[in-house]
Length: 441
Image (tube, rainbow, N blue to C red):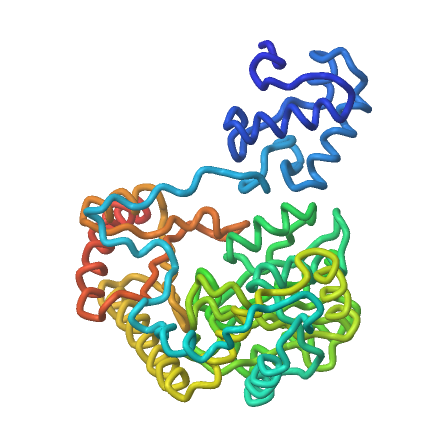
């Protein structure tokens, strides 16, 4: 086998190897999950020392382009931080329940708040964060009983999480992540050169025993979704929050990051495990409640973490658009928005519960305590997806949401009317019958 020809990897020192591997990934010659040659094989093919190849692979790992998998060798990351082709949309004849979107009919109209936004152009030298926005955000967080800390404005939940991790961690650090968990967080952690440590999840959130094992393995940070967990819909209850706090108290220096991405439309009360922590951050996004295109989130946390986030932001993007800040302030200050969000939370809960009940009527296990999604364990994801597509439905395969947990599919119920849940449940039951026969054989 001609390794150089197959992979398009060129010599030129460690930098040359890194550049050629990156180009191969970017151009699709090295696909996600593809295995790279061993250090010795590539060194022999390029006629360089194994030390040079090892240094190149180390750089690629730090940049999140590849990861080491023990005996499976070095492989391209599932979502390397490079431009990629967008995911192909579901065929137009399918009912698409795969994207995780909120229902547009339950998002507030922007016409009236836009008319109220100040028309004067924003200029350099103005405060980075609008005081009015911080004031209404503080009232919301206080009303929810969440820990108090300084506030910052970031460009969405993932932007906030990335800035927190960059402020506190370094490549090679281990991070405890929910499993199943949000694929974008998996990808972000890999892109930062961090190492994921899975923490099993049930309907009440991360399991205390699994978190204890991850903390014992030396993780530096723990990222959790207190409610509307994606993809499972898990949500903390008071008992689970107490248990997790007790486990975390034995590790006071661990950074804890909470992603409250659904906020007021999650369908359950807000809870936190961050009270009294030395290093912590909480991010509340508006993407699910006000609309995915409003790329804004409020970040709070301990003074050091928030100061580092704002300091790095000040020498980069500078600030989140003041037009966007004013728009969110106007929406949050409108009683009509409060009424709509309360109705949205009730509607999402009814749709989610209808899907879980319909599946239960067919004897199918499903999870969806909060949020916009229902998680359905299956034996074979691909076969289930194909059978549902034959029945006119598109859902999301669970593979990218899993680290060590079992196969499943994710159904976004945000726009699924309860009357349609029975039809989807029947289609899913039909797709699972062959699996059940194999399982019982």
